[in-house]
Image 1 (tube, rainbow, N blue to C red):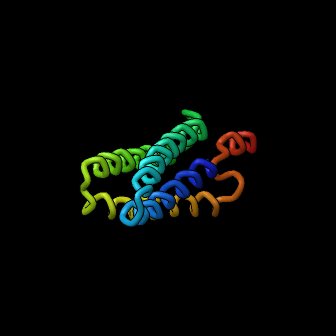
Image 2: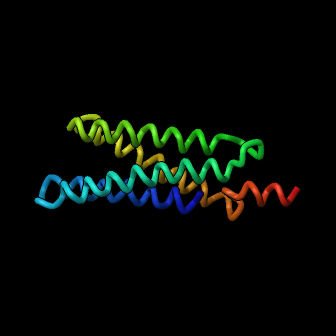
Length: 124
């Protein structure tokens, strides 16, 4: 889980950096487009990791809901980017970065069993 959240956070940060390049260089659009695909893939990976860590019936589905919500935000972000609506695309990107950093910090503060539903099961 932590690796997928870290990858997602890095991808969203990369998007912020390439957004500036998008406005000032000829290759910025290419980098931002590639970054968008990586960020969306990282969001899907986060959902998959959350489902695998959840192990239906073995714990709270809350991480799956968080990951699915982030994927929904990423989907909206892609649509807004394609439609060239920066008035919504940029603030949503900032929100996504904040939420991703928050999820990363929350996972890091829980220690080694943060995503280890199986580890908690073995301890019982």
